[in-house]
Image 1 (cartoon, rainbow, N blue to C red):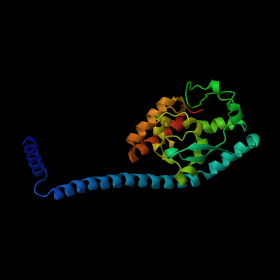
Image 2 (cartoon, one colour; image 1 turned 180 degrees about the vertical axis):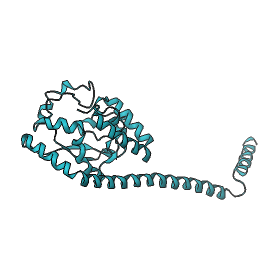
Image 3 (cartoon, rainbow, N blue to C red; image 1 turned 135 degrees about the horizontal axis):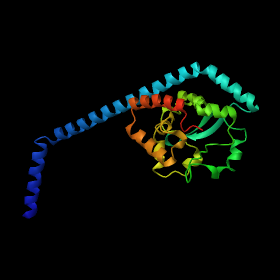
Image 4 (spheres, rainbow, N blue to C red; image 1 turned 90 degrees about the vertical axis):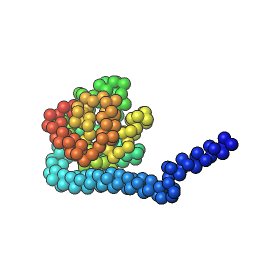
Amino acid sequence: MKSSNHRIDLIEELYERYGKNPGLSTFRHNFRFWRKKTAWITVVGGAQLIKRLLDILASSFLLIALSPLFVLIALCIRLTDGGPVLYWQTRVGKWGQEFRFPKFRSMCVDADRQREKILDQSHHKDSITFKMKRDPRITLVGRIIRKASMDELPQLWNVLKGEMSLVGPRPPLPEEVDRYTLTDRRRLDVTPGLTCIWQVSGRGDVPFAKQVEYDVQYIESRSLLLDLRLLLKTVTAVLTGRGAY
């Protein structure tokens, strides 16, 4: 008898909740869900599309407008020691995708071999990243272009190709990613960029743990307005040269 009463109460509750037509209520619920999902996809997808268009337009314009500067830098590097103009690395992008990453060469030709001898001199102690304020491998021309971040300009080609964006976490080396924790891997959730929050907050002076914190902050609050602010701050950071070495 008690079980029967419970069943009746349950039926009455369902009737009160859904009315005479439970299918209609379910349809309304599903319709609201899909309407919100579609609106979310439209907003997020639209913002990503605009960001990509800006990347294409800006990188195309800068590659053309700065081409005389590229030629001048290339000549200076070539005349310094006769070595290659560009230095290529493998970097890790969105979701672990590796890609080729060019920089104007700012170090001596055998810099990678010499790196093993000075690893213990990194000022990022107990860190995944290697940074050295007075790196003996850097050439005279290299110090100049590093101070003004001109060595990073060839990466505009990566932006044009879609491997990078103007704004986003800086792409790490594969050996650095191998040592990442799960928290650190949050940096790989978005397309990497030329500049980011920690780049305008001290660049090489920002320790790795703080870099991750800044990158996660960007990922969780990214917007077109934030990107524009960071691009403007990047100009100031380049002019002051803070943390660049």
